[in-house]
Image 1 (cartoon, rainbow, N blue to C red):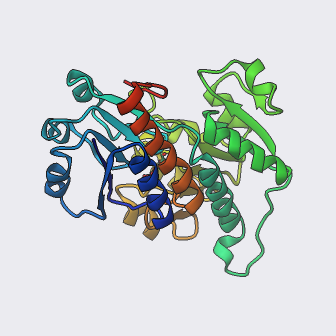
Image 2 (cartoon, protein in one colour; image 1 turned 180 degrees about the horizontal axis):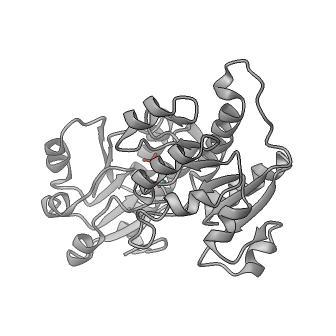
Length: 305
Ligand code: 3PG
């Protein structure tokens, strides 16, 4: 049994070492492909492996077709929009994720970026505080919950909307549930996005929603690029000189944003929400255990296809 860890953006070395131990202890052989620069390298590496562990790496039908022995794909992380689930299912390949394992890392980055923007990118001028401000969490899953926990430490007033949860479930966690997305944006000085990229959410955050936010609003995206209607957002920034956008995922038209609104937007150079030693260890080890467990026992917990 061969288990390939294919990460264009590598895990921390300590996490990889621990993953290898888990794989070897299960009697399998770990294979490592890191920082690869071309798809051909990935196509060659998947050829004869039984399991594939990855991060945001694109696993399309061509990769799946090239992986003749593949039985399981484990996304070490939450979002699996980078994997062609249909192609995997057609070849009876099980796809899993490792939900929650990197959620705290993303939540901590949210507040790092919010404070950075509230303090004018640390330029020494008078900024604002998060205390007492309203925060809307758009989608209340693992990351959203962690964001709520940290926000309470900042004494923020926390609202959330999630189409898959009842108001009772959200309120039970000390967070104020709202009845609609529109209401969330109306009440929130800050909105933090945590929706996956699905046909329903793609391009769903744009001019109309952002325009509902109160004066001096900030939108923060540590979720997915695709959920933003970039043109609509750009127009909203033009209409509202008070509005701030900060994101861990660069927009396609990044130069337009940064040249037109240098003080009101910020983008990390590379998606780094889950890029901590702890998150790499949590997600990587979970992925290693899930892959070998599936190969040995058929355990399909966290299957997504
Ligand atoms: C996720 O879906 O788990 C996050 O977006 C992290 O992605 P990454 O592993 O590519 O950093």
